[in-house]
Amino acid sequence: MAKKTLKPKAFFITVEGLEGCGKSSVFNFLTTFLKRKGYSVKVFREPGSTKIGEKIRKLLLDKKNGNLSLHTELLLYLAARTQLIEEKLKKARSFSDIVICDRFLDSTLAYQGYALGLGKIAFDSVKMFSLGINPDITIFLDVSPKVGLARLKKKDRIESRPITFHNKLRRGYLSLAKKYPRRIKVIDASGSLEDIYVSVERLINRVLPR
Ligand code: Z5A
Image (cartoon, rainbow, N blue to C red):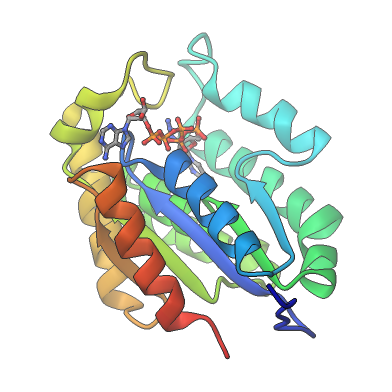
């Protein structure tokens, strides 16, 4: 297939969702789908994708770190993000057609802002430390916590939180989708992965700039 191009600045897609929503599978599907269409695609995940970010990720997900304070947790996610933006993401936006990130700023708004109750502090700091980088499109894979958590085989520090946390998280994401309807697209993730792929493919074909 002929090489397509969206340059000079890569189209920036983020994928978000609750635990067990199928995010990792959708992310891989999306990457392959876009490459097959002929785009150059750069992929990242949050927290992580840099040496420093991966170290921060280990700290954040380690079950032994149960006493991590809420503000420390927020600052660690922001630290991993600024490292990614400054070290890799800005560059990737200049050299690729499409950049995809597995979680980005909406995770901080939903997890730290809504579900963990940091509210305005999370919103203000996310704005400040996204360094002017905003996704063009965010795919929110929506599934009820009951269905999502039942799909998991083992749980990390965050996934082990009580169901009330996961319910707040979902409400948080849905509020964000209501607030930013042009950017955040909600996809029903309660069905089979094949059904979710079809919805994602349709959405991407609709929103990609021509
Ligand atoms: N976090 C935060 O709090 N604040 C922030 O600012 C940021 C992140 C950036 C990152 O950990 C954690 O950090 C994350 C949010 C928080 N919370 N947790 N936990 P992570 O990267 O390890 O976790 P994750 O982002 O949730 O992704 P994951 O664990 O890699 O996978 P997943 O995307 O949740 O998994 P999944 O694809 O949904 O699949 C889970 C299982 O379910 C798997 O066996 C699948 O085959 C199965 N599955 C999924 N969908 C289906 C369907 N539709 N049918 C049947 N089976 C399915």
